[in-house]
Image (cartoon, rainbow, N blue to C red; front, side):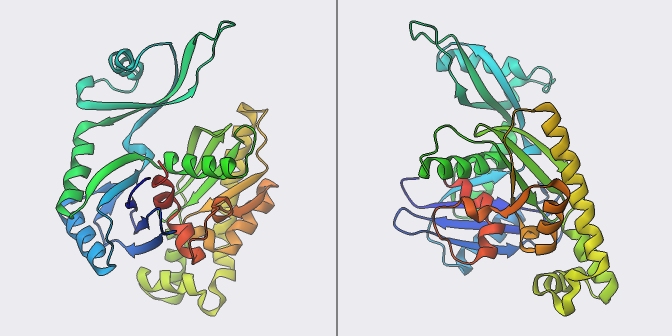
Length: 333
């Protein structure tokens, strides 16, 4: 980005804001979302969220006005397509028809976009076809985000699915190291409600698998075993009060997550036998729990690393980088 930009990710439990400028490495803010304001990755009240954003921006003295937001993958349709070589105007006409298996209602209710993956050429250098990562999202959803940020005193400039933020991180990492050709990556987002594993083939997004077990299960276990509410339980988790994170109950949850991750990796390996993934990068609040990373490494036979290894810039406190990885990544769009 060439100007001040505020990267945003709104989760069911926390909102992350990455305040970035060219002159500054940026600062990451992580704030708890009021109860029941976001449910199942969907914002329940756009007006209430707008007010919450406005209050958060003011409280943290954030000066950036332009916003780039990473939204959940389930809010968009995504498809990897191969099409004949054509102009932008021709793509605008033809791209909607590529989603006929997904969108049965009026196609005009959606906005379509794409990223070019490859443009094979013939012996004369003429483009033969275009390999694209195409995305479709409801126009009303985009409008809801625009209005929400406008009411929060901000301007929406970039909106893209969460895997785009991770793709940006991967590309910047490989480019900074002058790696010849993009590599294969697996990134696991250890979120509050669920765990998502994203795969990238030669730097390009391939697929996401969602595991229903999330960090909230650890909170629920701590709340029950220590007889506290979930908010206090979360604080106990983050401070590892009385060594609770090494308890048998927590270890059982770690192993359940790790076994599911192993199954996802095995399935991906079966369908992509030539991939060279040997390390799993972890982000989200769960990446701060050492036991989870150890369990993932033990069950998958791969190194489990924190995603901040992919950032070339130091952003300060590791906790904020892991929680705010998607907010940071989307500013690189």
